[in-house]
Image 1 (cartoon, rainbow, N blue to C red):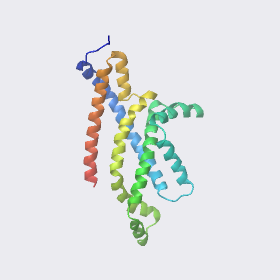
Image 2 (image 1 turned 30 degrees about the vertical axis):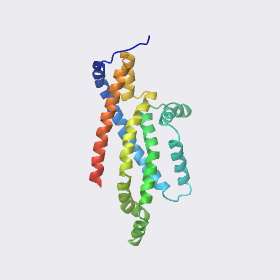
Image 3 (image 1 turned 90 degrees about the vertical axis):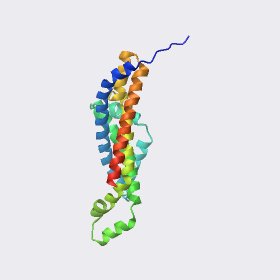
Length: 220
C-alpha cells in the first residue's frame, strides 16, 4: 500500500517569506555575477575578434573549458579545490559570484565576438579615413553598433544566470533553492515547499524578461 500525502497550500504560503529572503541573495549574486561576466566577456570577446598571437589562444582555452564543464563543478572547484591548493579561504558567497561571473563571461565572450564581427567592416575603414586610432575606432565606432546587436543575447544571459544561481546551493550559498531545502528539512513538506520555489522562480524570471524586453526596445 503506497504512502500518500495531501497537498496543503498553507505550507506553500508559509514558506514564501523565507524564500523571498533567498531571492534577495539570488538577485545580488546574479547582478554582481553578470557585471563581472560582462567585463570578462567584453575583454575576451575583443581579444577573440582580433589577431593577437598569444592572448587569442589563451582566451579560446578559457571559453572552451568553461563552456565544456558544468557550472556546479566550477563552483565546487572554486570553493573547495582552488583554496585547498593555494592555501587560502574563500567564502561561499564570493565563490558563487566568481562562478557566475566566469561562467557567464565565457558565453558573453562569444556574444561580443559575434556582434563585433557582424558590424560592417567598412565602419572600421571609415574610422581609419577619419584619422582615428584603433582604440578610438573600437570604442567610438564598432562597440556602439555592436552593443545593439549583442543586447538580446546579454539580456538572455542574465535570465540564465538568475536561474543558474540555484546550483550554488551545493556550496551552501543561502539563495532561494538553499532556503527551500532548509524548509523541507524542517517541515518535511517537500511538494508544497518546492511548489512555492517554482512559483517564485517563474514570477521572477517572467518579470525580468518583461523588463529586459522593454529596455531592449527602448535601446533600439
